[in-house]
Image (cartoon, helix red, strand yellow):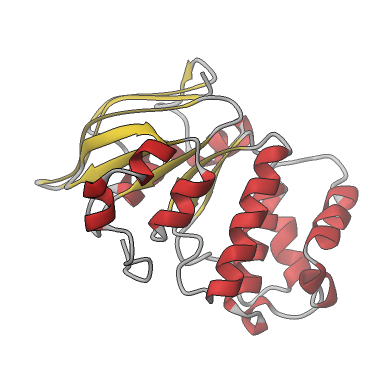
Length: 238
């Protein structure tokens, strides 16, 4: 098992954002997490990454508990979050942003950066420009490229298609599939329910912090309750 979350409880004061949640990611999987705004999806990812301390439950990565580890230590172990809104460093150049992804490494990353530029030619053309001049799609590619430099075994993506045009959304999901074929496991929180279910192997549906449905993504995609609640509303922010 790559990631195993059991009975996770996340609270902000008296508000319970995640309630007794069980979730797992097997090696090589893309697992989607769906739900409306306020369902607890981002809180789940932030807790797994170590940015929010859970009130209860366990988080195990490759069989070992990570509850006592900082977010940076979890990155070093192979868990990387691409946050909602990208959170790139707009006052740094594209190249400097990529280098930030390798801040905990002591080896030469130049060959890996060259491969990222091959994968994202627009970034290569703008390598010496400030990241603030990038389009939304280019910023998302930069955020993913930065995350790849941490050599993740699990990449968590929080609303990666938010604010992107339909053409860029398709390109993004092609990239997600490509990275998965290369062996990268993913935990995907995504507002575009249909695209997420089409590329995931399994999915979880949250409602007010509780798990209300889980199973093979194809089965959930065909469930009329999911169709009524989410499909046809891909532009809604979850």
